[in-house]
Length: 490
Image 1 (cartoon, helix red, strand yellow):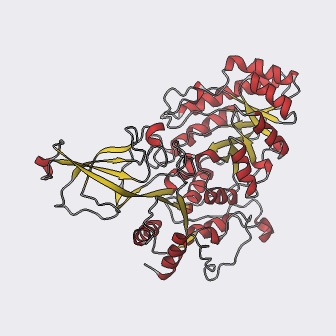
Image 2: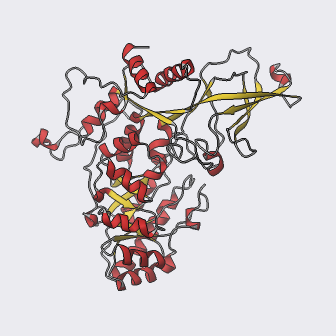
Image 3: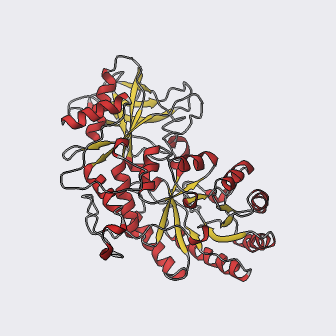
């Protein structure tokens, strides 16, 4: 392992400030927005990867003399940057807003703020968090259509003017507590095929939209746009097309009633995994076609989207330690196929479904670990199950896994763990959030800095897209459009 990486890992493991490396030779230090600096992450040099970093961190944790071993995350911020470039390439008309509730870790918020994203906040705590790092109120949407009065008053005091609603009660609360707010009407969608059916709780039916728009007009409240959310894990991209068509009808209703509507919010539901049933590119193609038909370029409508899983799922890896094990005899085995002994093994981890692995409960996932030590071909496998620390029957992380014999203190690594896992409070209470070590390759860092070149650096290049080659799967030129704030909330 290179010396630079080893020193950075040691500092990351100890919680000390991370090493600030000098810029690459010949590369001037460019002016950035100031949200993210090199001291916020470990720089992974050429020839090494975040997996190397994770291996060093687990080795350091195993050698610690405190005896206290806790799960931790390694977050590849370069993967977040790559996802952003991909989004701008395939949905060039859409301005992304990040759904803070998906992953509120500071490294993620800082890199996305540096990339110019807006932020979709569901409550007071999320608004405070993004404003604490310097995000202006004009880049914040309070997107929860069912808010506490205290949250509405907080938005009013801190200049957050764009709020969503889907019913008369919510409208009345805003009229009383934030009369200068600009409202976005959230409409229901056909999300029966999605993993999460948000329309059971959120969204106004098309039949009720005219009545809500009339009430808003009588109350002197500006309704400036329409939003929807097709739910996570929707296998049918045509759901976006149908929702965009429905939004067009609501825009027409608003125009008839005197509302000036100029924001269309596509919500979320974009896949965070490369191997998803519906690829992001397929969704983007359907969305672009629907936008061209119902909201053509030049129509005066700003197109937004609220993305969470898309940005962070694949960027985070979690390492979890085995804290106890138990061998159970006379259980079904694969003795005939593998020659393994007639027993199964129960492993207890320091994290469970009431913490990091909550997706088992909410998304019906089955996390599969990667082993740091690859087993030999002749090593016997045992039917194994993984359990969390809760000590009750529901805290089962995974079962039916065929694993080699593992020992207490061994580490299991789980990929694609960035969504709804970091800084979430344990459902059982009292559990501290797992530590996150952020990393980025120098190549990604330079691409990020190049993305943010000040316009005045080259007055002759105004309006010209610069090639941004990041060395990932996307190797063609990515033309990055200007970052904007919707005119209606400026």
